[in-house]
Length: 284
Ligand code: SAM
Image 1 (cartoon, rainbow, N blue to C red):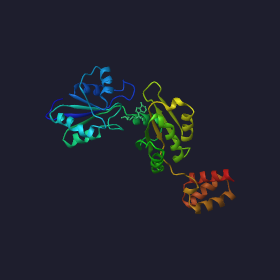
Image 2: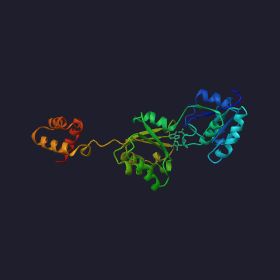
Image 3: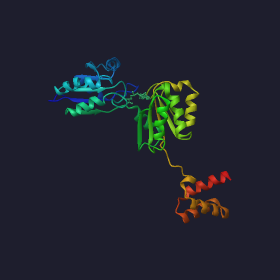
Image 4: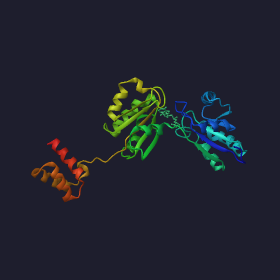
């Protein structure tokens, strides 16, 4: 692996199940001169499990900015370094950003070695739209901050993904329900890849009740996913002129025919007018 300047490998480690480490990750961790780890004691156990004896150096959020230069010097001297965090992919709600930035600025090649990441694992099994999504990391710990952040996300159309600490999961779900409404589809992914792995998909009010009613659901690591906002296809989405015509036609003919004819006259979508007509019928 030696070249004039060393490479910085950003290596994903498991988020629970130790089998979720790639053969490439193990090879890199064995071959580099030094592993920059978020918590050296924690990572030592992982290294011992795989019989890896590469020296570990601390690279956590408190020393990353200042100590980064120590790793950069070794990289510039031609040594390869691997960056790992306690679990999953470094830099994803984990330290590493400053080191990667400094390395790139110093002309060091930065090589990702991909693997487990809780948000991607959760999204891959959630059955919520995954073509576009937004990762919000951890919400503010205090209710005021959390609610105002959620207010900003209320009409976000992409699937939303949050990390949350177990002792705040219930408050988080309560605030999600409060701001996004009780019916928004959501999913709680808990203890992924571990013994008590649970993926529960329900509308927000039911998910909140499920977690409230079972203290076991308030333990362990969790990811919360919420379906993005969709514009309500109801009366507000239909022009007042279309509503007037629909009302007139409904007095004269069956619902389906009235919706179709109103759509033809106004250019509004037939299925939207049909839904509106159904709603009206329920109310009348
Ligand atoms: N870097 C990690 C990654 O790639 O997912 C995330 C680190 S962040 C400090 C820790 C948070 O990730 C946890 O509080 C939880 O929200 C989520 N997480 C990590 N492991 C998880 C697991 N096995 N199941 C569910 N969520 C997990």
